[in-house]
Amino acid sequence: MDIKDIKYISTIVEMASFSKASKKLYISQPALSQGIRRIEAELGVTLFVRDRTKSRANSCSVTDC
Image (cartoon, rainbow, N blue to C red; front, side):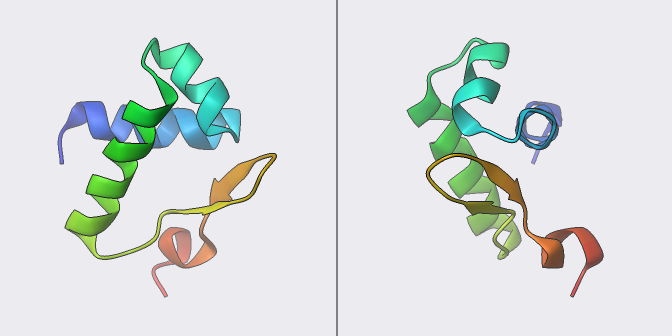
């Protein structure tokens, strides 16, 4: 994981949306989703709870369950 990955995560949390975060980061939404899936696989945790309208940080990833 590098600084770019941390920026991706923090922007998704800030915007509560992959789509809005991708626009703010000037990357495509599929590229952002792939990056997050890669990070989640690397860490072995699900970072975000996704639904059709918004994304939020997984409480276990925040509290270290």
